[in-house]
Length: 218
Ligand code: DX5
Ligand code: ZN
Image 1 (cartoon, helix red, strand yellow):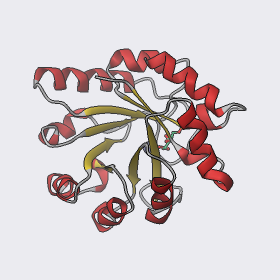
Image 2 (cartoon, rainbow, N blue to C red):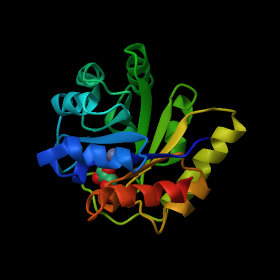
Image 3 (cartoon, protein in one colour):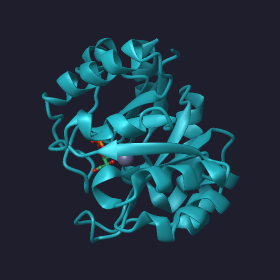
């Protein structure tokens, strides 16, 4: 599968978000990753559908909304209307996961499911035939700039093996602490879509850091 770079705008300069997105576009980014946090499911509060709508208007890249929120069913439609191409919910935040994932697909978006570092991959086995994307959190969600949890590599390998053995075709995405020193190892383990925040946006040259990471996964 093609390896894709998805800069997370969580740590971008929001005083000029359109320009920040231009910088990563120039660096060859494939997606824009939107970290949605509600201050309840995770201890941080970020932004909602209105900002996603503005981001979607400012780029032709795929917009990927990662809902780190409780009761995501209540906002799925808003994020899809805002233009999200992918909507990812947390397995830990949803009681009827099969129903929620089918709702995302019925509304015309690609359906993703995410698991926290302490949640086993096996908790997803019953929905892997219907998902378009699985997001392995490699940090405890809530903040950018955290350290990559090394145990995540084993989970990526386990998911990759399950996908191959069952002839499935969902994308494997990793989010949290990804940088130029670990991205090749994460890629070798089976990751397809790399979410990177701090290592791109907290840099003097956003375009150059994007190019560097893109080259490491290509
Ligand atoms: C969860 C967020 C972050 C972010 C990536 O806390 O989802 O993982 O996207 O941030 P970095 O790349 O700075 O760890
Ligand atoms: Zn994320």
